[in-house]
Image 1 (cartoon, rainbow, N blue to C red):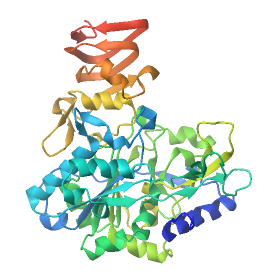
Image 2 (image 1 turned 180 degrees about the vertical axis):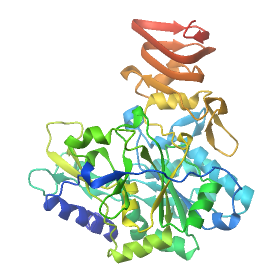
Image 3 (image 1 turned 120 degrees about the vertical axis):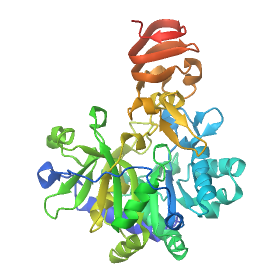
Image 4 (image 1 turned 30 degrees about the vertical axis):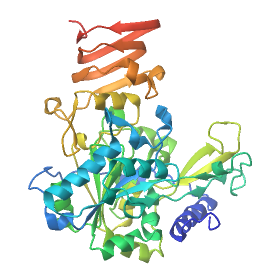
Length: 446
């Protein structure tokens, strides 16, 4: 890792996880050790407007290390277009520019990039963003890399044909060693920046909110997680719970759930809140906690079993050691969570999500904010497209129907929506061979 230039803070974090692996710690969290999280505070979003003094002490960090390969994209996922010619990155920059112009406060923006996304991101910013939001030294926090572990020998895995495959991302829990090891943590603190709002770049619902910022600052909590109510679609998502032994909040991912507890894990009435992966940090308290741990935040280790070449299932079996950013909630005395509306969780994981986002069910305002149309009352349409539409390119031929009144849409086969197609309630379209044109009109037909 040193030979590859990995920072010492990340090496310390990897050592912590590797030693846990060698001790044969499973990383599993049993149901009997938990109590459900209940009665979380709620904040009325948008109230009061931004306090310029608080904004000047705030940095927005966007996790931007993912490629859109599962959707057929050969570059950073945040270069997907939300509207013609307008990408996720463009909207994030527009949000920060709007805040700076309307308040006069120099709110900062950092992209946590990976080696796979850095060039794409900075190249796009150089062409489409103002100079102060395009300079690498001002906007980039670099994600680390960790060696894949041979599952049989627990030694570093090798792949002579493709040595780059010997490395993997360490999960978004790498945020903490990256902030420390890069010098960004001290740099921000020296500049008077005290609060960090962190979210995924593909979650356009996660924007800096004045009420949440004010509530977090007044709470004096070192860490705050945004959670929202689980639905049947979220049964496999990481949930919030409280540890019986000390009463602290913790995050349990499905990979940390013993098989015999899976039914309880997926019980959305028992464990009612899931992690939106949007968090708030007190940077001064983070530095104190890191110093207490010798530069390491003791996040729970997650074993991710893969093959060294993910495209070759016959290649060497490996373990990728990962951590989750939200798991840090258990590392801070006084950490808290707040329940937010579902509208703050609008990630784009599939082309179905992207189709919904491109439709009239969502609005994009001049400040770069993406909002569900008020008539939807906070309920996003559920869009499921078959494997023939799993790549972004397929959406061009599919067309974009009106989804403002849609509850759910299922598409199977080569469907083509004409201009003027309106989906009301729930509708399914399917075809065998050939193309099926759907003419303008309201569907399903009554």
